[in-house]
Amino acid sequence: MIERVSLPRNDELAGQFELLADLMEIEGADSFRISAYRQAAAQIRETSVPVARLALEGKAKELSGIGKTIEAKIVEVVNDGEIHALTKRKEAVPAELASFLRLPGVGPKTVRRMWLDLGITTVRALQAAAEAGALRELDGVGAKLEERILEALAKPQATEGPRRTLLGSALPRLNETLATLRAHPAAIAVDAAGSARRGRETVRDLDVIASATDADALIDAFCSLPWVVSVEAKGHTKATVVSQDGLKVDLRVVPHASYGNLLQHFTGSKEHNVALREAAVRRGLSVSEYGVTDVESGDVHAFATEDEVYRFLGYSWIAPELRENLGELEAARAGELPDLVVEADLRGDLHTHTTWSDGKDTLEAMVAKAMARGYDYYAICDHSQRLREGGFEGQAAAIDALDATVPIRLLRGVEANIRADGSVDVPDEILAQLDWVVASLHHGFDKSPTERLLAAMENPYVDCIGHPTGRKIGKRAPADVDIERLVEKALETGTFLEINSQPDRLDLSDVHARAAREAGLKLVIDSDGHSIGALDYVALGVAQARRAWLTKGDVVNTHTWKQIEALRKRRP
DNA sequence: GCCGTTTTCGGCCCGACTGTTTTCAGTCG
Image 1: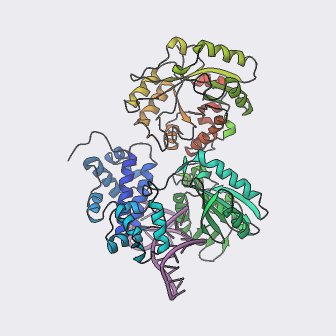
Image 2 (image 1 turned 30 degrees about the horizontal axis):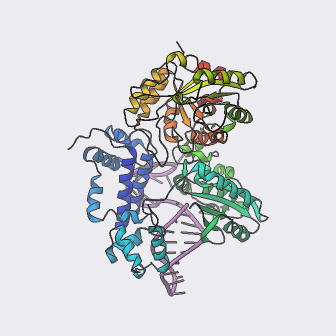
Image 3 (image 1 turned 135 degrees about the horizontal axis):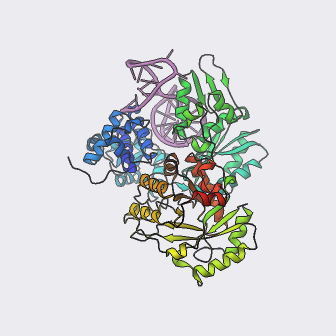
């Protein structure tokens, strides 16, 4: 056996189980085993500590969806690099077939026929067959699906899975759609659902639900919204459309009496709903988007609000951000759900920029916006190396002058770089004169990021670590930071960690933030705003904090500035 | 494969829409 120097990361483990599930599904294996592997993969992705290490300690079994067999398979990855069953399966089923599943309208049964009836095993061969009109010869495939496949293959990365859009990019379209549909005469109620309502950092599509006096009229109006470029599906209760930028939007309409059931169903997540329904089935109840049916008597209980749905099933209402089947159902049954932080709890922003460095708006404009948001305090943290003429002294004078004229407390801050040796690039004499110090990694993400962050936290003036993993969603993977050690050191030194609210950062992530909270660490929710509009991004950070089960008390900047001064590390 | 507020064995969520069909399988969420 080969000893691996480093443990496989959770996304690598999850990817292997997902590929194994895909190949088994194409092979036609037992569907419950397949979903067990998918369930395990999802659990591994949602776990903040290395599951490989848990498996070595025999503790991975404690995670829901992971039993003795899957734990043993994880150990196989540690020892040999790959799940043995996956290695074997790849010999039987060409692995490239799994990518066919990403094509629209193509599922395991169709892939199996492409493979066995036509001998297609590569994307290239699939494209050639489609172009030659050979696919339509298959059972269950017609000219229309063949055309759809060709169209999809013409796009780059067609077989690399659905493109996910940043929540921050998708929200404007969602809000615009809600406003238009709410104004329609046939509309009774219109709401967002799906992953956007749950506040996930990225969304694959947008979900809108409604009740209406005339469902067809509302669906017609939805399908003819100005930004709609194609209608993928349209019936009497639902429709799917695609926007210019390729974003799919679903609308679903039900009678108002079951509006609560629909909102609950369509908000998901799938995992949450499956667990909810399985628990209901054990008590003789069948849950669907139309109501809760008592199987024995046949009585259907429809509810106009979500709150009634959850209460009828024996739970307290569960905030959408928590609905991932990660313990929220058990907590709701026991009445032990946390009272989650809300945006209005924030009293200030502790990481912002101005035109003194790379910001787009002036100090005065940013502060005016901060006051409009109702903040009590506001920290200006321009980049240390990029301060324009006048440097720290010049900016300090400008901040102090403005501070004297406004009711809000202005804080002199900095976002310092963490160097290769873990030191920060601003001398202590200057840091000592500042009210608030953020330290961040900006380059060399692959050069001992954990050690550098730990060293920076030892600096007595560093109050908070900015965007701890340095990830850019969809562009740059998170640096290989050991979050457990980071949290441990943060608690030991009195340093805070940030939830950076930039739409493509959201760093710490929900999973990491939850682990930090469970360890007892308080987090700062910052905008890292470089323009006045960007100060509103904290809504995204708050959504991640809620997904991480954070209460008001868990968030540093829900406290007064005086309280924060008492909470943070002692200065020399 | 996993899992347990009647179960350690025998279950494992529910419904809509499309395309290719003459009553439904496959896909999707």
